[in-house]
Length: 244
Image (cartoon, rainbow, N blue to C red; front, side, top):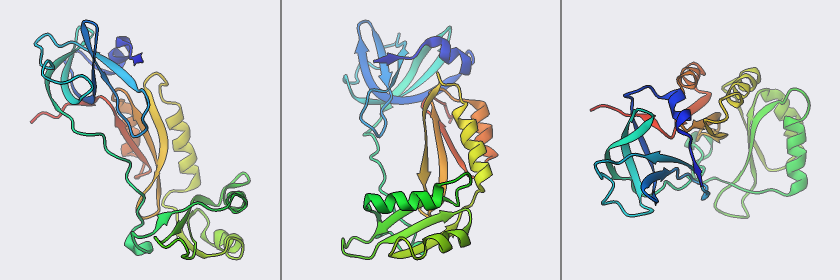
């Protein structure tokens, strides 16, 4: 179990800040903790909460709760709570209708083919593609479709057209490789103590985005996301409370 140090919160929250955070409720001795629940079933970061008014008393141990709290005197004091429902299941990949329809799903390919595609697309100092997604319809015997998000459309068609077999669908990458590289380097330089996850996601239109999640809200990363032209998705576990 990992309980986040309160001095980390002090770096990102100002006295009086109100925040919202959702997680699994855990009573540890004489105090209450909230554990992050992600798509991967593993023990996540935890936050210790002050609950002087016993607002969490009616919530069962292990239940999912969304808590509204205030950062004051180095503590997160609970000001309200509601049941948080169930963790969201990972959303299956669905392809936009404009690219062949939502009935197409990711599929595995033989290792030699995967290695050959990776070598052609991503090998060398300058990759010619951002993403390669092998797809099939729900029929296992259907022809393999190679969806490639390309930095260089003509190079991809030239190199893969007669190599992989199946149907080749190429779409231009929305973001140039230099921007992707720069953004990835910026994300990886994020405060490691505050970092929860860095990864990537493929949108329904085949385009790729970089994803980052922190424990506490980072204003610099929010500004970076806003100026990234849709390349970066950023969120934090503890988020500023929205006043209604």
